[in-house]
Image (cartoon, rainbow, N blue to C red):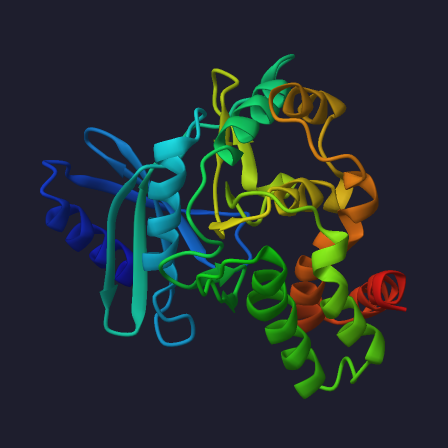
Length: 289
């Protein structure tokens, strides 16, 4: 804690803010980073700390993603105050957002705001920099075709890692799935996506405003966010109704959900193994068998 407090004081000094550090308190809930609340004589901040060698440029990529979302998401995004590497540790200092509840309209607002954000486009799929999906590096090589992007920058790198670790094996159905992506997935313009939109990465402030955290941004297919939102319990139906009212999905999207969930499933295969292997294999058989 003493080292974190010293680092926090240095970070605050480098921001140029006049704040004087009063306290550094651990915050629970993070499974990748060590997290702290910084209390100063004038404000409150959120500090994330991690190993700079194990996860190089993780916070630089996260800062880029948060800034991009803040430009286009009508809800709230933690503001990047400062990002720095000291020795073998990396630090990301953000504004503190006090949590509240969704209230009666929060999930509908989230659906509306996400639909509008998904209308933000780019000439190609991908991003100008790679980033992370959880604790795994995520490729964002700019690509004209989403089928090629999903195959080459999402599915194949993780399937290869899983095979190298011995948790999945060469499978003709996987190759067939990759070859069928263009015929299965409807052509749409690239959309700005959060990239890791499960319930743990959505908060609401004390006004009931939706807050997005921990992004894995790219210009991708918007059904990636929709499919991700349906993992681990899914969102309230008002979210999906509001989304559809503002940016209707292409018919048949329900049947494509497992295909778009294959990428986060492969992330979980690599990190946790277990039942995620079976779930990933079922998706591969469904679309490539």
